[in-house]
Image (cartoon, rainbow, N blue to C red):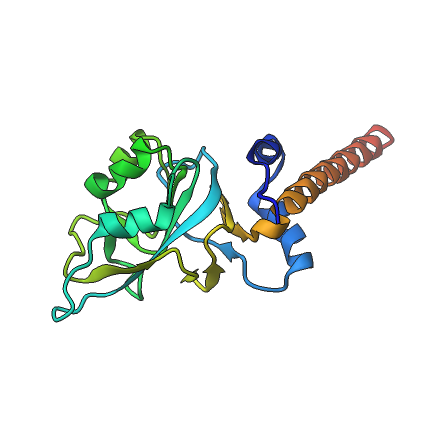
Length: 216
């Protein structure tokens, strides 16, 4: 199967929303695909790109703390450029998974951003570095003795939604949608068409109302 053409996909982004993508995608696949109620310091920017995954687990002293850098490089592979680092919180949504020092490498390497159901430190710093962030909130205390990055580049779950490496992530101020790579181009095309149709319905309703008022 050929890889989706990112340039084609990005041309469609201004014409779509999470709602339209959800409506189109769920007609194809009846599984949970939306993640809501995350916070973002970058609400005016769209997070979009293929997922690179890291799975966290509760820390165990006898097993030791795993190295985040190794987990990160296993997740992104040869290049982080344009990818979305998706991290599962291992059942501790208030634990900090990473912060400015750990995540700066992602910004330097051109990653699109981060999506996680855990907390992150230094949100403003990460946003200024160019990353688009969607997470459970900001943390002050590091989670080095609470959570550890156990595995990378594997299927994970984020708030009840399965994310497979290579799935495409679309997130805006309303929420996030996880799109299988096999249908991402078709879904975005149809979502853009749905948005146009919805605008036409709104305009028709407005014109009908104006016509009623003119004939009173």
